[in-house]
Every structure is written in C-alpha cells, then in structure tokens.
Length: 597
Image (cartoon, rainbow, N blue to C red; front, side, top):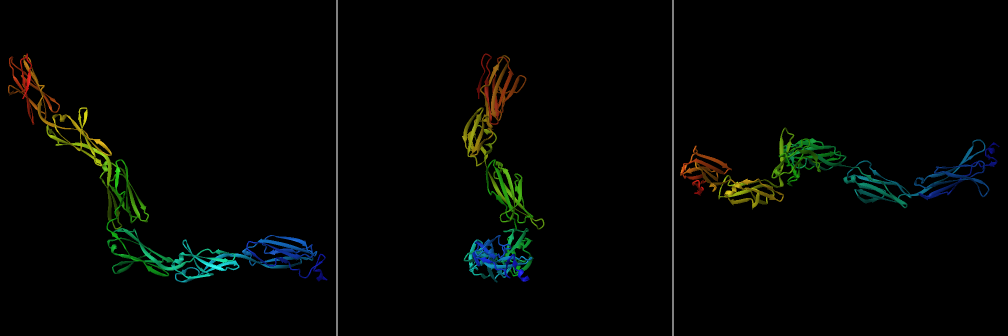
C-alpha cells in the first residue's frame, strides 16, 4: 500500500519512470548562421504539478507553456531558439523534464538529447613549424596547416611572401623543404578550403641559423687618411645568431699578425700603414668567415679644403658669402679654419655630411669693394694630429673679381716738370676700373670756360705761352659709371717777354720809367742808361714788383740835369734768354717812346 501511494499525484497514477520528452526535430544539420528552433514536449499527467523543462546548455531564453493535446491529455512544451555557430558543432543539447511528486520532496527526471551538426567554412586556420625554434641553414623543415571546418578541409594551398612578391609554393596539409639563408626573410601562410569557403592563416617566419656570410671591412673616415690621424676599421657580417667573435689580422708582406678583437679596430695611422693590409674574421656557433683584405690610402698632407663658390665675380657693393669646408676625419680633433686676409669675423661649425662623414665649415661674409678686386682669398685648414704636437696644413684659394666704375682717376704729364714753350707735351689719363675704362674724354679749363679738347687715354699738343694759364682734366668711363680727375696745370718755360706798355715820363728835375716783363723761370730785370748799368743809389732809385709767378715790374726814378736827354734800356733775363726795350726820353714838351730790340 505504501508503494502505491508513492506514485499518487493528486488523484493521478504515474508510471514508475516518466515518459521521455520529445524533441522536434529529432536530428539537426544546419548551415552556420542559420536560425534554429528546438521544441521539447513532456507529458503532464497531473496538470497541477506539471513537469519543469530545462535546456542544457542554455543557449538562450526558452518559452514554456502547458497545453492540451488532441486526446485530452496535458503536456508541457518549451521552445529554444538560437543562431547556429561553428562553436555549436558536435554539441549535445539536452531537454530535461523534472517531475515533483506529491509526497514530500521526491523528484523524478526524464530527458531527451540530440547532437547539433553545423556546416561551416574553415576556421582558426594556423601554421605550425617542425622542428620548432631556429632551423639550421640546409636542414629540412615541415610546415603544417591546421584548420577547423565542416565538412573537413578539402584543399590546402601554401604561399610564400618575399617583400611585395607572393608565390604559390605547394599544396597539401604539410609543406616540407630545405632551408636556405634567404628563407629567414621569407614569410609563409596557408589557405584552407572546403565547399563552404576558405580562410588564410596568419604568416609565419622561419628563424634560420647560419654561419657568417658577406663579411667585409669598411674604413672610417673613407678615402685617403691623413698620416698621424686616427682611423677605424669596422667589420660587418650577416649571421644568425649574430657574430659572437671578431678577430683582426694585419698582413705585411708574408707576415700576418693578430692585431685586435671586437667589431671595430681603431689605431693611429703611420707612414708604414699604407703598405699594410687588414682583414677580419667573423665567427658564431655555426662557423666563421674572413673578409677580403683592405689597404689604407695614407696621405702625408691633409685634404684640400673646398671653397664655395669656386669663383667670385660680383658688383661693387654686393654682399659676398664664402664657405670653406674641410674634412674632419677625427671629430675629436677637427681642423681649425682661418681666412687670409681676414675681411670680417667668420662663423665656424662642425657638421655631419650625407655620407656620415664629418667636416668643419666656416662662412666669411663681406661687402665687395674695388679694393678687393684681384685679391687672393685663402682658406687654411690646420690639423693637429694625435701624435704629439704635429700639425699639418692645407689650403684653398680663389681670386675675387669685383666689377666697379672708374676709381682714382688722375692725370700725369710727360715730360714731367716745366715744359719749354713750343715743345710737345703729353697728358696721360690713368684710372682703375673693372672692366677697364672704355672711354677717355679731355677737358680744358680757362677761367670759367670749359671745353672738350680730345679723347683717348693720351692728349698730345704743342705748348704755347698761354698753356701755362690753362688747366686740364680727364673723364674716365666704363659701363658701370664715370669719374673725373683733378685738374692739372702746365708749367711752361719761356724766355722773357717785355711788355710794350713800358714808358718814361719827365719833369724838370727827374725822369721816371716803368718796364714789365714775363718769363718762366721768373726773369730778372736791369736798367741801362747810355749803355751803362744802373745801380740803386740816392740819385737813381730802382724798385721792383713781382707780378704772379712769372712777371716782374721794374721802375726807375733818376735825377737829371736840364738839357740832358739820356737813352734808357730795360733788359730782362732768365735761363732761356733775354729781351730788352729801349725807352726814348724826350723833352718835357714831347712824349717819350720805346723801341724794342
């Protein structure tokens, strides 16, 4: 009786095991991304205590309801809806019905299951390398392509990427090949494909181990090396793992010696360094390799500085900027640059060139003047060597060409000094100009009057007495301008010339005479009465007046007896000759006259 009561549910009799729930559909095979609805139905013999339906796994919220069947029985149904994913493939979905019995806490369960089959293209495609880690050059390596797909992957394709180039290199799940050094710079990936699509793996790159290759030596500074300066040899080599040991060797004739270790070898250059050769040995755990030998080019004198620009041709007044650059093979002891002549302060700086070498540059700035024309400007580089106090110099020069209008225009006279009246004289016009003077013009100044009297660098003419009172100057001209010289005046030598204006006057007691003469050199004058030279005395008074640089006026006053009619002679003399004027003294009632000799 007790056993029967255990199965009583509010007036309902339940079997010892509840009925298995019913899943609809009973099988599931769908494409990834498809919406899926599963229905689970369980009998509810006691509607007041219907079974509780649960889904495992709980992919989403479900909707449960109690319903009456066509045969008037009751059942509980639950609908589970989700979107099919490749993650659901192979998953077992369970619908469990939980019955609570009336007596106490007794529960009974029943369940139904189905396995989800999801069709999907390849997923999680990846490449594995065997052996893993680094691979020695020349050995074999296998790449394996792994991918999830349903149906399983049908085709595998392998690709090699080298820079921008991509090539197909094989098919099948595995790719096996022998490793070369270049394999380390190449990347590989696989493509997995089934009937629903395809997917690429990420790229993988091999780590290839190989002994040193392409071992070489570079020299810094490059090119010729100044004797006494420092030089560094650098050993470069491709290897994986990187080179562990560098060894340096010096070859001198048949003799070979180890001279250092490490990637760089630094030493001071001597004269003998030019006959020696050097090479390096690079070594890692897989092998070693020697570079070819290198030989230093030793220069006993430093390299010549470089002037920029190499030529200077500018207009006077223009700003000029000169740059001097000298190699600095040893940056710790850069050359010192100096300019000659030192036209202004210069600005120096140490700089790195495009080829990674160092140099010192100095900039000299000045304003071009005609005084600079033809000047040689020198940039001198002074190198202090590491060995003691040894210094070496090198220099570069350029000649400055300045274009300017005529300067320092002047006139010279030939023959110089005084010029004899009637002789020929040449005036020469000199002027500094670049380009040289193209036109010379001569001007004569006489008082306020200025006249053009000739062209050309020289002016030649015959000297007259009047030339001594005239002034001359020249005008020099080129395409950039013109300039006048200062005026010059000729010094004309001529013998004395007595003026016709000489005369005498007479009173009862005395005779007064006056005589004027001009000459160059300045003349002297004397009086003669009746052939006898007159000297200054109480009775005969002579006075003289200088007329400029070349003239002289002489006056004679003398007492005389009544009835005397003396003959007077005015005589003028210089180094070129003499001239005389005879003055006739008449009676007081008559006019005096003159007669030139």
